[in-house]
Length: 223
Image: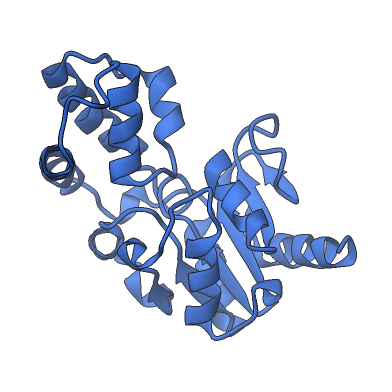
């Protein structure tokens, strides 16, 4: 194991609540209800793909032009950016800082592989940017999660083969993307939802270098 590829939302910090509030407000303006259950389907999904799902939910997918959709995405993101300005290092999820310290000490590569275009700003607010060697720009990959592109790009940025990586995710689409890239996967959350992962933990507090190494070795042994 030479590199760890991290999702951001739900793994490093929980920005889901801010995404939910921003999408809910935009949905209300469009006459489409975005409740917490439906919001679960948007986790790990790119901004434009999230909007497409919301418009499909409202039966108005064909009502907006590509330019209008971009405008709606921008509006949602501006509201979201206002909301996350309140974030501080206190918003880092349990166990993450000790894990990042372990990975630095072990000289393993660490890459952010998030669908969020706001990852650099969020890492700055959390004061953890220096723990990561690089961040994949989601705008540079051909297809978003559950396609493997962003994790393959992460391995490339780390300068290692996919087989030498492990990915950490909290969304089913993210786990699917990791496995499609032939990378070992650790997931945080509900085992019934994240069953594709090589190992599922109930909380980020359970993450450690030892857990990542064991999972990677088990995945490698299973081919």
